[in-house]
Image (cartoon, rainbow, N blue to C red; front, side):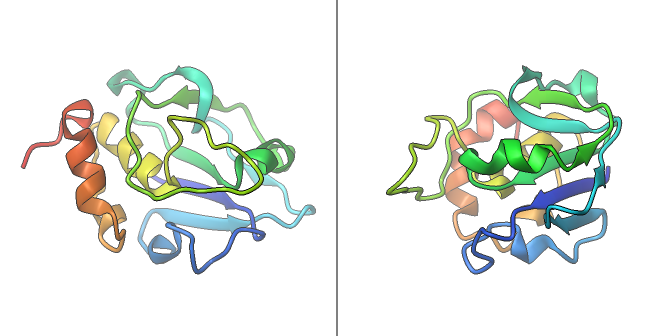
Length: 151
């Protein structure tokens, strides 16, 4: 499965949970610049407003927008193609979020958590996505039963 990520350059690379995976095989990070078009046709787009992601969606590539919640709509305008919006089941983040300007959704996840969860639900868990994630063990412990992960 190929993972395509449209990343907002306004987000701090130092704090970004996706920075460590930029060189992994099957992962492509594309920086948003307002001019570039991104073809995500036929991909599953992780979207909290979509249908529930299930194993029936297996076999498709993934697309994720990595941005603050308030800028997602702007970045979506750079995306071409017909997407399959899918939401994750209710999971608990381990990432210590706090914002002084915008309230995060109660069920929001770090981007790396969302990507790993999607691969697990699709039956192809990419554990290496979490290798450099500081809160890996806490995230897995909190969500093991929902994601069907043993051990």
